Length: 483
Picture 1: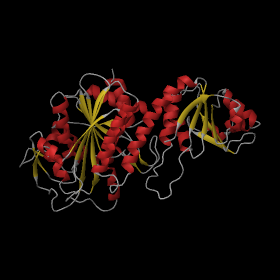
Picture 2: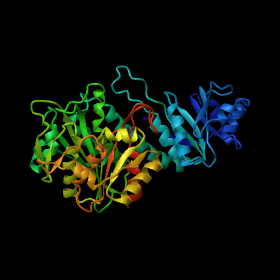
Picture 3: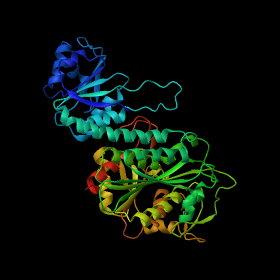
Picture 4: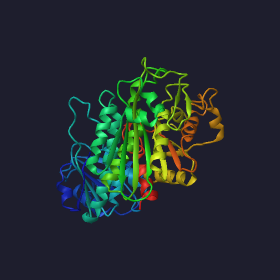
């Protein structure tokens, strides 16, 4: 990850820095002192650029770049339009502009008195590339040097930003990793390594889950040679009942016997996106020593067609005891999560439960790739999640729960069907999960199928895995579950 560091703003260093120099300007206000110094060094070229129609047409947070500016050793002078009293969204966009331009050279960012955390965080989030599978990877991205008036105060903000950014990058790396490299066993081993950060990690194997009665989860895994795992990550930074965060970890989803179409199936390496977000979040809490009690659970399976695989029409017993008629083996994530929800509620008696899953294609039809779908049985929790998502610039939209969706999944032969068909597909999936949440337990389900992997740039990521959810849940925990 791009390294973030704070140093005292030295106006003379603006002339001698060899990489990229970043300054800020507003056409409607006097130039800040660092920007003014760069204007003198470039003999007025910067002021001409700021006064241009091109710069005036930029939205706040966007940039204009002068290559190899005369009078400076810099390879590039990046000028970002930013009002003196910038909004959080404008600060995020400014950080994105910095990160988008990041390469192997160090960037010197003349923040001076501007808020360091949000700009630095979003610069680091946007400065990302996945190189693990390249035979000849590019060199590491250069550092981002935040030149500020008070480096000591900025250092804590940058440490917090680094903890979050590195955890989002971990989530993206996990989602990008191919299924022949990252499988149930190697992912569980990687999770076990997080104990070095102070997390307590448990890994349940097939035998332990069988003894617990998790036959819905195990039914999904029975067609694969990669054994199922349930990883439990404990972070106890405070006393009292925990928040439980649960992630769907289908390492590869063929659809099982209800085989998916071949076109695009290669993207089903991302069907463990909920697990990746949960692991990234737990790392972030440990890195920043969060004063909260949070337990993360990830169910790791692979959904494959095989002579042993479950079939449409099979009926399986969940850990709760409900009998589930399997209508479609491609509606497998909810079978994994239903046992996890019952287990978490029964074992940990949490304050609340939040699950994340790349659960349905239907949520993409409803919301596209800009918002996750939020289903929640508690108005206060729903409001807090939406507020946290808005505060960090991640999109979310509340979707309905209701008795009509429960009726759609009633089974003639068993207690419940695992799908109610195409109509309201994301709502019936959430309704299925709701049956495994105890009465009175605050619970939220985040369907992240549309936001976990995008075909274009997302809010603070290049195209590909976004890491959506780490920032939102971290912000939620700070606001609602710490202390």
